[in-house]
Length: 372
Image (cartoon, rainbow, N blue to C red; front, side, top):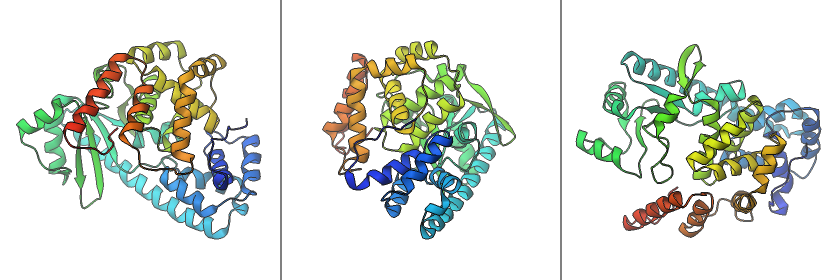
């Protein structure tokens, strides 16, 4: 299929086209021909590497170029990408080993822990740990286990990233609507671990994490059986995560496109009902729209019709398009533009009100920089 072109600036058109083609969830003969044709255009190869680094997709880009058209890539560029790819693979293996070690230690102490994103998505969606980049580790726990997790991590050489907290301070911190993770850093290993007791700040979504815990499935993570988010829930969670961060990374769309490719038999009626119940129907629609139009992700005709029937989605997609591919990509996000987007991506008044409450909170705290 032909992948729709965002409204990028003219000078970058060939470069962005090649990037998006290489991020397609599957590389059939048609996509191969399109990649080979795109590689013959006026591609700015240095810009291509820069974009891939910004969007955390260099490993996937290198793999696809090396597979489909390595002789069309300048040797200097291919060597640079190969070196960076090897570094990323080594880091992924290090982080995966650390994740398994931490999960084993938590299980041994009776702590319910579930890996989130990172290694838990790499193999199920990409078929290997090598193609999905991740820079830290995310683990979801039950709130009552946080003191035990803190003790365990400190014993293993980690320290709270933003300073240690007393028991009372930690309890207050975990009750705050604006917080959802307690972060730990191991200086010797250079590893950041984010411990989640909920998926997002309450202002973003008031979903009870116990719903997701209740529907959890099992995942084989390098020989270790661990709980994981059910695939239907994961699609919603990924769309919400990307929407929360204004889809500023293409890697998040790659996850969605890969999920749709690997799981073609999703229970769509159930998914849509659940999205409506969670108040994230528009976030789901936006994620599906972008994954389909930019990366060629396949959707059932009735779902695509439903997504495109939402007039707000095209407007939101245009905002994301301009932010990523416009004449001034990655320009500073103002409080006004971010707030407008966050209100538009929510369909329920109660969720809009909750987000506005958070804006007031951060203004009163004197934090004028944009927080999403």
